[in-house]
Length: 267
Ligand code: DGL
Image (tube, rainbow, N blue to C red; front, side):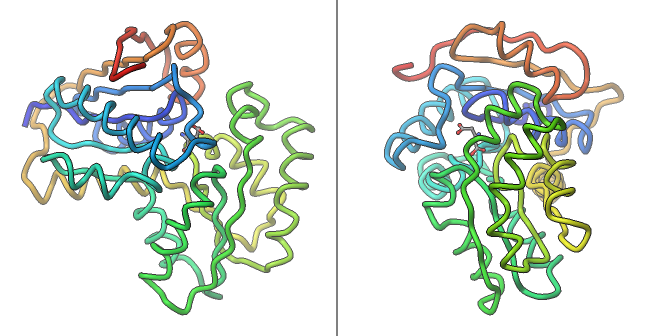
């Protein structure tokens, strides 16, 4: 099917998910919306984030998409069920693929999840993990400073190391063996998180797991795009493209990003 995969995030972070979808499904057309005018979602109420999710989805639907990926962990945590109910196409969030991979990876049953305040506060990861393994022990932790660190590109310096060791100290005490990177930005800090948590803790990258789920859904529906060359990529933002383009290069990891300014909903 020629139609595109629609992906939205609160801003630039969801490009970590796009990057994995492109790596896994290079022939697919991708339309990405970064709601840069209203980022961050991680400090907002579930009602507000759900309204933003609906508006973003309506915008992407107008672009003729075949499936929707809610790349934002916060939006997935608080609004995925409502988006699935409201809109007709298949909707894939980042939370369930990460939870499934964590349950598959853990040996001790002690699983940690780090994310934004809204994601951790929603309890959605805990519910997802416990529905897969009721005996699992769950430890959630909000790490809000990781988002600006990743955007600033401070992902492997002494500031990143210090912030990580202070944030993650309580999780180290819990003797978890699996840690879900439950936020779009955290894969950029993987190196430093790995260093702080030590070799005995498996890190689960929701972006990688989500891309695998997208591939599965398309294959099951027989909607994989059959084309010889790579797919097209379009990037839309709700605020000035310059910052998105500058920071986006690092998140996407494959050359220049050009974005177009659009308006969604009331933004
Ligand atoms: N995209 C958000 C997430 O994955 C992080 C940035 C924000 O707070 O909007 O939770």
